[in-house]
Image 1 (cartoon, rainbow, N blue to C red):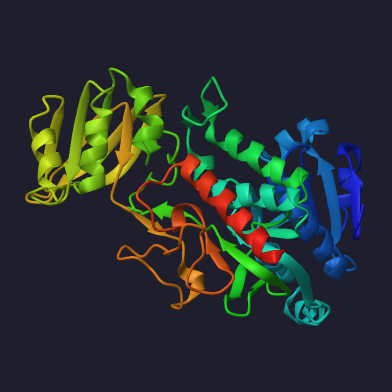
Image 2 (tube, rainbow, N blue to C red; image 1 turned 90 degrees about the horizontal axis):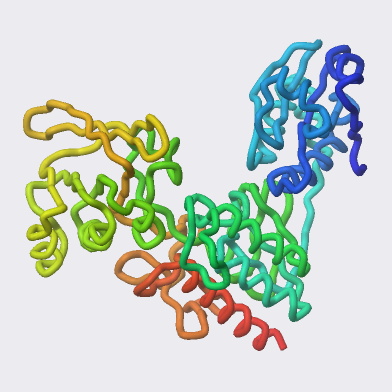
Length: 427
């Protein structure tokens, strides 16, 4: 095992953790992408802090009793100890290097932390292609490039999979007879890219992006320089900022009617929004649901006139004008609640429903790229039929790109085209 790390089991926990002055424990599992993403960060930080803090790894699957006793329910989980007592933050999932360092700095103290930070050496890595974004477009591009023996590094601020990983079930992706869990479809894609040789830098912080010089800086110390860059950072639903939205995303709250409407056959749903996407998606959902309640903040719809006419004549659809959601609740499987407020009276009431769809728009993930890329009127990246943007050597693929339809299959198509076009130029 690289780094200053000691692997232990439950019988050594007292001696190797509780009896130490300072310690950090990584509970990990096998076949765990977040654990793999953490491993390199944990190892490199152990080289810096390892003389002052005891770094330990515990295989959670073979130490279940200890994990249960410590209330460790997910992998990886990092727990920090000072003189045998838990301190600082408990970190789990896609763990950022900066969050680990923050807790280690607290353990060793400000003066020692400043000294240890001086040991961090800048790293410069060169690659043929740098892919920004680990959703279907980025992962597909990675597979094609790696199979062509083109050195490729994929960078994502989250774990691989993109927005698909939050989708409950995907039933329209070619090749699968049965619907697939979104996170498993994402997992298959990322494992395929990895097995073909794509290098991953995931759950990282992107500090600087220079598209003209084709280089980025991540986690404060590694600079990656590339000959070509594929931007595949996707888009994200415009957040409502309502309590419960993040908690039940993909677990009662959906943002994709095409993906999930079919699971609400003869069920009741609530749709949030009143623009084109909300009304057109509500009409699609009405093919399946027995009742739809549209919650809209204005006293009229913003959708095109034809869609409005259809939705207003649909007997399944009821519209609450001048209402806004204030809280989302979950009682059981397909048993949700939406607390809405009457904007005229200020009164609140709860709507019980089987599912919730939110359609208040998407926004492209382009915050890091400055203002030199050409955008369409909605803020998405413009690219030609071979995915080239207006900047030399910079490509765009997937939901971050301007196009009429955004589905997993269209993202995969974009990633394929971008990879092939990039490969030809590199030749």
